[in-house]
Image (cartoon, rainbow, N blue to C red; front, side, top):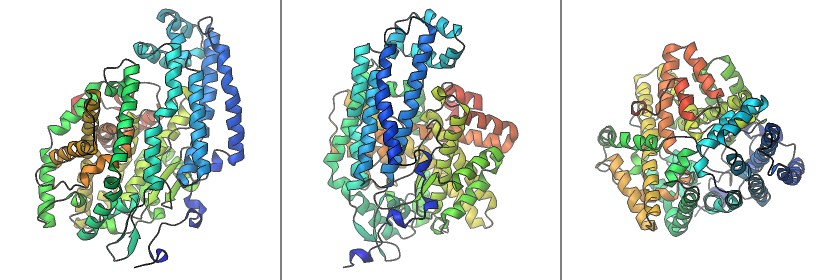
Length: 587
């Protein structure tokens, strides 16, 4: 038996060089400055009271109310960003757990204090409200906001009901918050021997890396051991999963939507038909994935194809070559040269000024993300680097989000300095497309080109088929819950397993572990998020092709897309960029 010191453990954060850790002093100099801002906002929230009952009296009152609401919103977002990034650096630190909970609570109080605004505005006759906007030049900034308010009029409740929903928002976040803390800080994964015989602690990042190993026995060990906690705590996970479903269903019913799906999509004026079209398109085109599974099984020379065989390469495993982070930065920069100096300049700034937290450390949040737009502050990126080619793709993916957030933040006023997730996944997968094209073009050996072409097929599998499968699963579980069916762990496993088999086809053996994937995917807590990976992939492929073939005019359109924020509805912004996602042909 190896001692704990002899097992390859994750490094502690202090051992990582500062240049590979994000610098949160760009947000606040220290925790004390955060506390000072927090107390200021806590005091300022009472200022909402002075606008109650007077919004209809003059356009100036309305303008001042909007500006006050914006000022509170900017500070809350900044406070939350600092607390979240501090907590995600080491999820065991109770101080930052508490800071995040405090800012969530403060956000809930602010939302409750300002909850009268929408109902009060909607008591003003539509024509009068629009005339107020027209008569006040500064108020014209909020024209799209007000038009959207009128569009969703039937889903806005009374002042008292809106206040109650706002106050409940902190409670309704409990399922995801508990899930995240449990999976990132509390769960202990088994120790296994890796493909070189070295004992390692399995983790989220190490599990993903293991799925690309050429050593099949190691892949199987990693697969079976990684899933053990999800099987062990299946009842806990199903309780959290169901709690999240019921939270979103409650909100949709309260706001008089036909379904949780309609409520989630209506936020950005996206028709339910777009969601269902993605699922129908995938279901009508499953044969290519079935053929790919059969070919993979044949070329790997195995009797049975299992989930842990799905992504290992058929060729020389370039993915097992080491891609140090600094080398990866250069590859990403080279691949994005078609986007021009403006884009590359900001990207270099991000790389050189500690916008990115690179390496996996003990109790650091798993996965990867970009923090999104926080007005007046640059966006941050979290990674868990393992020196594999997949990490290079993750880097360019997250920097796609990062640049989108930057360009939106500096190009749009605060009310529109954000963007919908529907658009977000276009910017990220666009970068992946350019990276893959760059790698294929610069591969000198035939075997390498074949590997990268296979990588493209895997991208289609992961970013389109797998995400649509998740989206279909999500739609089904909501429909069943809305019809009163209780979703036990066994039912969830059966639903997910049958979908997995439908998508991959008869050549795939669906192991018991794979059936528990519903328990480990955090995106199922994001309320109909995952379908946007598929729509984003489809749209980004079109836009990337335009940039490659049309050059500068297409680049300008693409940069304008990145700068558009939420100044229009996502479907319209994509149309301006050159893709009509309301059409089935786009998918």
